[in-house]
Amino acid sequence: MPLSNITDPADLPPFAVSLGDPAGIGPEIVAKSWVMREARGLPPFFAVGDAASLRAVWLGPIATISTPQEAAEAFGSALPCLQVVEAGEIAPGSPSIDGARTALQALEVAVGLARSGSAAGIVTAPVGKEQLYGVGFAHPGQTEFVAERCGVAPHNAVMMLAGPSLKVVPITIHIPLAEVPAALTIDLIRARALTTAKGLHRNFGIARPRLVVAGLNPHAGEGGALGREEIDIIGPAVESLRAEGLDIRGPFAADGLFHSRARESYDAALCMYHDQALIPLKTLHFDDGVNMTLGLPIVRTSPDHGTAFGIAGTDSANPGAMMAALKMAAEAARARLTHDG
Image (tube, rainbow, N blue to C red; front, top):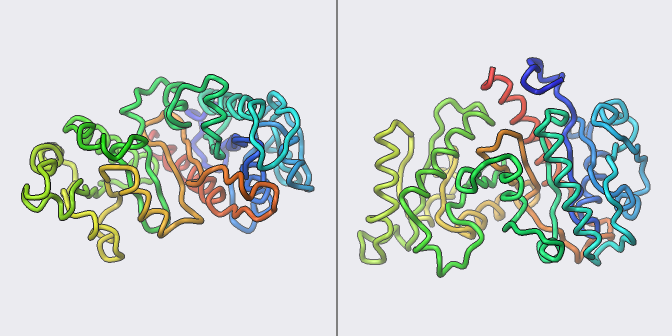
């Protein structure tokens, strides 16, 4: 049944979980999440990738499926896996070009299933970008790839990092710190803020999202003494959005935005660069942080960590972020049913 025809959240199809790099911890944390499915109240899901990567790190039951409908039937007794191209010989902790090719194919298939409505959304396990670039991957990350496949312009797909007590959005993402000032524009800040507000409404049911904006410079520029970006770019962007009715404040000194009392005053913080957003998020939610892409026609989440090749195959990976990503995906899919009517 297409998602647009579903009115009862209980009728949602299962979620597609791309296994990521088969030599990373993706297969392990997906398997551990299935084991914890009842204890953590996880929605039905199925793995997309090479089942051999699961067997390399886990002795539990695996059900090879050919359709998402079969996943829903198998989920109670085995981890369903939709097999894509095989990764060849899999050695946890030792990434390969064949493994990267499998990871990319799994991502492609998962996106297609979500776009068709056969899956309620996608959860993406981590990939090794160095290996992906070796098979022709031309995007900065999975976020940009998924956006392209969904027909969404890069500036309209917003990466939000979220945990139980904090949601942050980096305005600029994977660029050198020295290039951040030149990359900041009024239009970019406006686009990120508008997508964030709409995403919080659609995916979390927040009727009037409260946004705060961090400054770029120490003390938010100290009235221009420590930089003019707050005066010339960030402040005007905030004021224009306020004039349009958004509940948005700033720019504020970043060092005072993330303590417990401050976090109670907003739903999401917009930060000027990658580490300004991710340092507080990972400090507070290292084991349960989620990467959610806002602005897409599909639900997409991911655990907010990497492949961890160094511990792959040791049975020591913490599945907390993967389980959080699954729960957040389900929350968003249910909220969209209400929002989209």
